[in-house]
Image 1 (cartoon, rainbow, N blue to C red):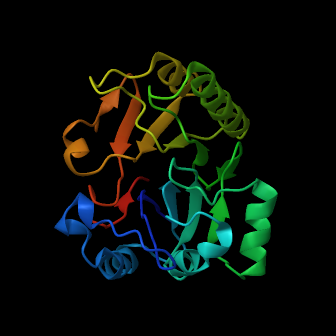
Image 2 (cartoon, rainbow, N blue to C red):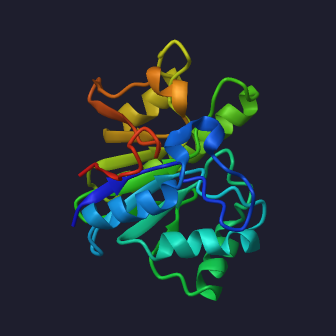
Length: 226
């Protein structure tokens, strides 16, 4: 079993929200992504998707998007992004999975997932445009997930949607402290598109490997994490 990652799928099979404004790279990207995904990901693998999965506003408007995801190879672990307006409580999300008979999709929200040799933890994260209390809330959520994961005694992979650093590439001290406190091995993140790719961190800093996994940055091919 391998663990892959890709974020910001921005699917819109039931809505009119094309991604072309971010460049021609997004033209017909769904079929390209589907082909490349199934070329590299086996059914027994895990794929981490840290947010911005669908442009839908409500869950029922995202059924086709999640059916597309469900039919791709691998078990998909999904956490929340800033554009996932359809996001509900974990109970409602699990009911949605059951009602639509999706068998390869799971949601992470203040929880963790035992992935064999690794534990997967998650939070949305934040950027500096949100007020301080929202930043603190996301750190609390990240801490909850990491604390649960640490109890399993395995290396941790952390999923964030927002980059854990500012526009000057300075890591946010509170998030950095949490990642290092719980000995996180890899921290993946998305959110960045187009020109945003030029300001990213893809390196090991103080023992944590930071990786940008936005779909367009990866040319719509999931990247192997572990």
